[in-house]
Length: 222
Image (cartoon, rainbow, N blue to C red):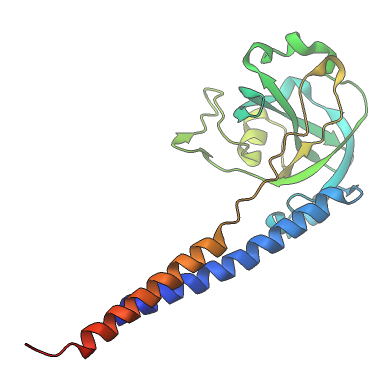
């Protein structure tokens, strides 16, 4: 019972620490999404960039979309099932993958959304997102078969032959594209924060274990 109590206390403390981390994350994300955009990190910053620490920071990048190298990544959004359109943006500093937004299955063919295939120099404003290596839940990316379940920046850049790319991608904001597709601004910014409930649960179990210990300890042999 004492060992159980110690274990439950440790789990409760861990949940308190997780709650502090989650609150800091929420505050950082809210501040980042409200801030004015800053230039996206360039190649000199990429090797030492803390992508996780920079995630959800609002940035801007100017360049030219390589529409012939776009990649469709399976997605489920508030608009239903479909695909993210991940397109390389060739900038003066280097290549950055941009999640331009969502398209339904009947818009996967670029010809069905030709108006949104912006040409010339464009400026993208959005949020830094961390790469998603290997694949999705129980589904591995298949570059040879062009089946993608996660936004794995390095693998997609290699498959599309666009050379070294930034170790992050940009989730484009909700600025409308001509023709209405792709639809940007669908970044999920809701973070579950049930850690306090979990902490109370573990501490309560620790208390029950201690009470059981004292009852057993005080119990006299028959």
